[in-house]
Length: 367
Image (tube, rainbow, N blue to C red; front, side, top):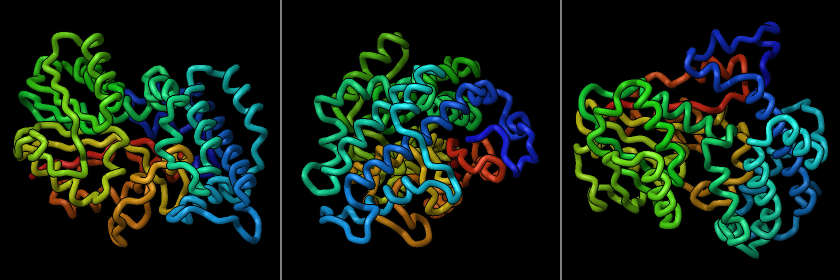
C-alpha cells in the first residue's frame, strides 16, 4: 500500500480518495506497517515454498485437496512481477518492532501459519488444528483486537460503512461471526459517534466457536454494560430462522471478514435477505481481492482453513476461493435480490492508484 505510485503522478492522493473520517486511519505509520507486513508474509511464503519443495520441477506428495493451496502459496511467494526479493523475515519483524510494535500480533499469527504449512500440505495435520492449537490459542485475542492496527482497520472501516448505511428509526442489529467482539466494539463506537446508540433496541451477537462466543460476552459486558446485547451460537451455513432469527426482524445485518467463508454464498445471502425487514441493510467489512487471482497477504494464514479455501464455487459469481473482488460481491448481492449500495470507500477508484488497497465495506439494501 504505497503512499504514492506512478499512477498518481507522484502525488499523495489519500485526501482525494478517502472520506475525511477515514484519513486518520490510513496515516503514514499505518501505511508503512502495511508495506512491512506484505514483505514479511512474502518472505515467509518463499520459505514455505522451499521447505515444501514447491519451487522445483517435481513436488512431494500433497494431501488431497491441497493442490490449490500449493498454487496460492507459490503465487504469494512470487509477489508482483518485478518486485524485489524480500529480506529475511527476522529483519522485517525487527523493523516493525522499531516502527510500531502494536502491529506485531499479525506477525506472530503469520509465523504460526508458516510453521504449520508444510505439515498441512503433507496431510499430517489439519489447518484448523494447527492454527487453533493450544500453543497458538493465546495469539488470537491480540490479533483480533482493535489494538492491532493491521486488523483493526477492517473493523473501523466496516463500522464506518455501517454507520453511513443505517436506516432511520429503531435499530435491531444482527452481527454474524463476531469472533472476540472487536468488530462489535467498533460498531458501537461508530453508533455513538453518529448519535444513534440510543436507537439500539437489540444487538444480537452471534459466533460459531463457543470459546470465542464466551470471551466476547465477557468483553462486551465489561466494555459496554447496560446495552441490549444478546448472544447466540449461529452457523452461517444453516437456515437462520431455525436458529432463532425470525424473518423480517433485523434492521442491520453486519459482519467483518466472515461471510466470504460461507459454504454456499448465494444461500447465505438469501438467508440474510430474509432476516432483514424491507429497507433493512446488510453491511460486510471485508478484505477485498483487488483483481481476480491477485493474492492478499491475510490469505497466507486463512488459506490453511478448509472453509476458506473450499467453498462452493460459481463460474459467474464466485470463481475462486477466499476473498472476493468488489465486482463479485455486488454481482452476488444482485443475484440474491439485494440493491447494492456504493462501496465504502470507493475501492474501485482507489485501486487504480493504490493497487494493494484491499479494505472496504460492502452494503446492500433489501427492497
